[in-house]
Image (cartoon, rainbow, N blue to C red):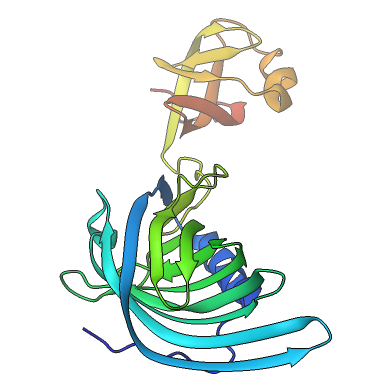
Amino acid sequence: MRRLILAGGGACLLAAAGVAAANGIGHKSIKPLTATFTATSVSDVRTRTCTNADGTWVLTSARYGGTATSTDADLNGPVTFAVESLINTGRNLGLLRGRGLVAVSGPDTTFKLDAVYSAGKANGFLVGRAHNPWEHIVGNVSFDFSSAGGMTNGKLGDTAGGGAAVDVQPGPCRPAVAGTEKVEARGQVSAVSSTSITVAGVTCVVPSELSSQVASLRVGDRAEITCRRQDGQLVLIKLGKEKKGKKG
C-alpha cells in the first residue's frame, strides 16, 4: 500500500474539479457510486492552536484509518485518510482538506477531499481516480468528524443532502459519422416520386435539395444515380442522365 503524505496547504477543490471536468470531455460513460466508511484509527497527530479576535483556532494534521464498504470493488476495502482540519472551537465551524486511498487489488483508488465542518459534521466533495488511472471518481461526501476520534457514519454519494457520486469511464465520445458506403446505379427509372427514386432496381431516398432535379424525371427515363448509406437507408447524393454508351 502506498503511504499517504499530507502536503502543506492541501489540494484546492476547484482546481481538482476543473481537472476532472477538462478530462471528462473525452469520457464515454458514467455510472452512479455509493460507499460508506468509518475511519477511527488515529495516528501521526500534530496539533497547533491560535487565538485571535474571532476566537480559538485548532489546526490538526492526522492520519485516520478504517474500512470503506461498497458494491463497487474500487471503493471496497481498507481506507486511509491524511487530513488537515482547521476548526474555530468557539463557533464550532471549520474546514477539512486532505488525501486518501482505498487499498484494492492492483493500484489503489486515490482521492482528494475538501469539506466544511459544522458542529461535529462534515460535508464536502471528493475527487479521485480508481485503480484504473484513467477512471475518475467525483462525488459528494458526508461524515461525522472529530480530530481526536476520526470519521464515522461516512457516506460517498447518497448523502443526507441528496448529493450523488459518479464513476466516469475513459474513452472517446464522438458524434455519429455519416455512412461512407456508396451505391451507384444506371438504367431505366422504374419508380419516381418527390421522396424516392428507383433506378435499375436500386431505390434511394430523395433529399429536399435534389427534389427539383428528380421532378424532371418520369418512369421509363434513363438515369444515373449515386446514393450513400445513412441510418440504414440509401440517400440520393447525385443524379444525372445516363450517358450514351452505358446502357445495360
